[in-house]
Amino acid sequence: MENVRIIGCGHARAKHLVTNHDLEKVVDTSDEWIVQRTGIHNRYLSEDENTSDLAYRASIKAIEDAGIDKKEIDLIVVATMTPDNFTPSVACVVQAKLGLNDCEIMAFDINAACTGFIYAISVASTMLKNYKCALVIGAETLSKIVDYSDRNTCVLFGDGAGALLLKRSENSCLETVCLSIGDLNKVLIAEGLPLKKALTNTDISPSYLTMDGKEVFRFAINAMQDAILKVSEKAELNIEDIDLVIPHQANVRIINHVQKKLNLPDEKVYINLNEYGNTSAASVAIALSEAKQNCLVKEGMNLILTGFGAGFTYGAVYLKW
Image 1 (tube, rainbow, N blue to C red):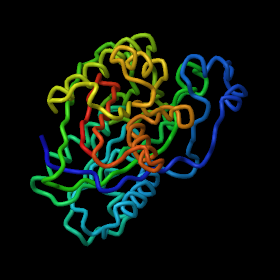
Image 2 (cartoon, rainbow, N blue to C red):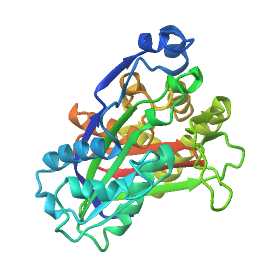
Image 3 (tube, helix red, strand yellow):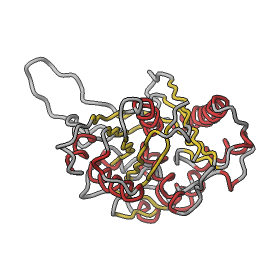
Image 4 (cartoon, rainbow, N blue to C red):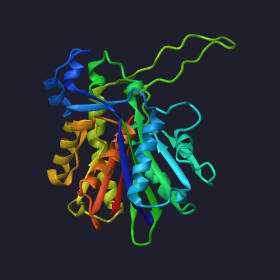
């Protein structure tokens, strides 16, 4: 168990609101169809801000919430599957945007898809043995890889970012479980650049996110339940001891299924996907920040953050607030 605590949270959503009725104009779908199958009403899409821009805005809010000098940060970890570029990393760009290039900072990205923020917390909390203050970010501009002629995927995803600051604290504790199951069947995938004949250039067509919804649903309900139980066991707690669960905001039916399996009442599960849709690695980060902003997270509470994603990846974080 790591003796670290969250000292500040922040989030940023993309500027362009897209309702289910807006999607009705571009693809064969309806508000009723989307709400019944996902629980999503709105999502926000970015037209003029890249992943690093959203990550920067969320970071500023987290720094303000923590009330610290940004120069205390010496570690930046960004979880994303939609970076601005192959290189440099989003984390390095955020460092520059924050005006921290004259500081001694380690900055890097990780990709665990929708579980990315959970993985990033796990990595950063372990590294705080050698660092003082970690800025952990989940940020995505999924609209870059969404096919808006595919009604099974385009209704789900939104753009946004969430951030938190971690510091070591002997009076706090954090436990993580991060797991994976390799997917060779391309159940949930956004393909990379294709190979090409040596010494030649070829036209590159965009690669869109594709998903086998039924297989993802089957994996998700088992993965989140397993992660919650495992992290509770590591923290030596029963499910009844948990005050609030903040799950990956992918589909309300998945969340409700896990609730039922674990006998979690509605007041112990935070849901905001109706407003944001699935923002992948930003999902849990935004939800945590918003829950704190709404005074639903209070000192002494037992919290679990949990997620699942392509890879397949899944995991959970337990923390004493």
